[in-house]
Length: 149
Image (tube, rainbow, N blue to C red; front, side, top):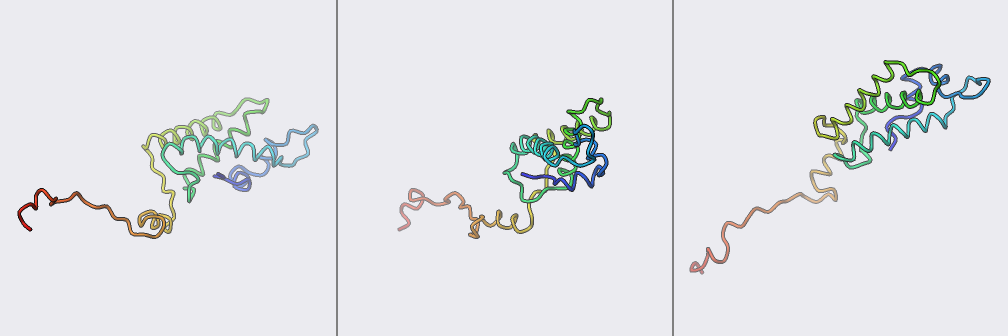
């Protein structure tokens, strides 16, 4: 499931930063390697899926903003992993915060609003559009009613 798009990563961190992190050509071409960027996005999504699958049915109907922000942090960290330079503390902290958030989601300490109004109503009414009904226990059975007929 795609939690973020390539454009969202570029918008969040800037075109020059994403170019610098994905352009591995010698000499640099000053272009974004979209394949490498998508690999980082997919890897971050797989991490999120692994945690979310413990509590939610995937794919989610709607991606909450907080979850999107955490997947962006994981994606940015993934882009830094294969670089020769040391990973900056802020990038590493973003990854650590994202992992802590996902672990809280997996444990149920953080709940995500993942449904649109239409899907929530469909789920409440029994997804096929039929009313949801739960029968209670019988108050009177044939033994209790013996002698009343």
